Image (cartoon, rainbow, N blue to C red):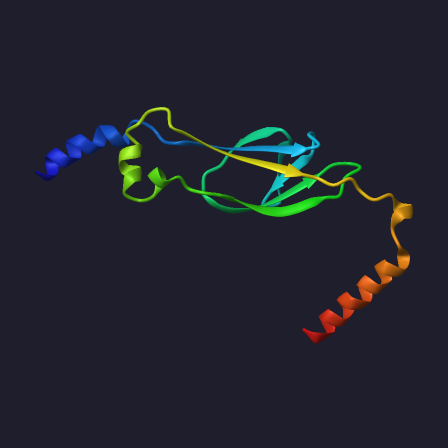
Length: 131
């Protein structure tokens, strides 16, 4: 019986693996994208990934405030342990996870209130002293 199971499962396991892609777009387009501090290109872009979970995402573009956030690449139900064994038998599987991020225009330097900035710095200093 174990040999029969191996004969059935071996071809299923050799069919291939899942192609996983992150599709990242932004408003405005052309932003430089960093995933977990690794530069991966400019939006819109499509990059392969190997693991599901939370990613640190940073977008940079001249004239816009740098956007730092996190996004989660969620595992589809059929990639959980158990069903994944049978899902591997399906050829040409592809998981696409799309993230769209919106950037804000940077404030002109003369629009920054120096007193407000100084007040923010003082508050931060007080918080650091408490720790």
